[in-house]
Length: 155
Length: 289
Image (tube, rainbow over all chains, first blue to last red):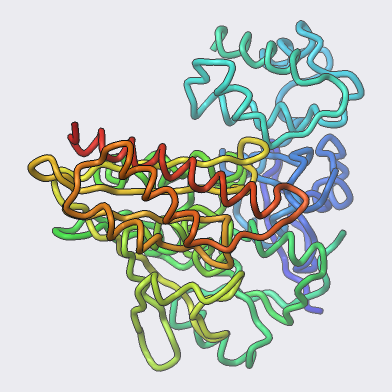
């Protein structure tokens, strides 16, 4: 199989790599670049764990190929904040106990980042509908909704 | 799982994409939003030798209002349809339906051309294309051709589109003045495929229905129109008795499947309930009393 040279900006850093066409964006981030904050759950677009932003829009990193993203800007959970300096959404997640095992958290954060930019999120129903593409097996979602509501109010 | 290996070709024009499809002799697939294709690759349900990426073709993303119709480019994303003022004004049923298509991350990538070409029997856009008498423009090796939505959907995941053809745009007829609409869907979880969904339009003049359209998805091999129910509504004012008769005709028009999400009987019951609500909403929005 032929390979392709790509140039992708991830969290502000430019990476130039040569990739096989079938390499999923999620695996490119984790295995090629070592950015393991993006988690891989179902690999068919159902669980939302691998959600990242591409050119500002949330996407499933398991449903895009790295080769498609030549010239694109990708934002992952590593770009939101640092352990010492969480961003306001991450701070809301901590404040409201919106995570237990943490597996779904990167996807929840990237999804909520896009939701907060694009929707009023005026009601809990709207928040829940917005988060419905991200599965969490620990929290029962209640605290995640609380965290996103708090982030909405602080926006 | 991981997708099988394939060669990757970026098309920079519609002609180049069609040429790449022809050169691949049926072994290529178009990569647009990829939101249905890539899961199928990851499951290895498909093993195309070549993917032809059309995302970089200029001029395939647009929502253009014309005198009698709205023309939409094949690469226009679901989220663009969801938020377009032109769609909200002229094709409100389509705009309302878009919030039910999967989730934001999917709607940011998924395209109208891709959804129609994929032809999922529970998807919203094929139903809307049928409801709104859409016309698809298709680029083929011999030039372009057009096909009406009512002739495009042939079976589950089966459409009138050759392996060397590509949908380039879709035109939706504008609705006459005095037309109300309804859209109702039930899914197990917000954003899941519909167990059943119904979209309707009723054109009301002088207190009577002059045109009725009822389209359904999730309840048959393809999206369907309920022709018998539409016919019994024309010339009438919508009252509870007529509505009950129309609901009965809607239920008689479908052949749903049983799967782990719902039984056929449940889907048949549900499509009638949703049709009743969607017709009542269309009647009210159209000015019926």
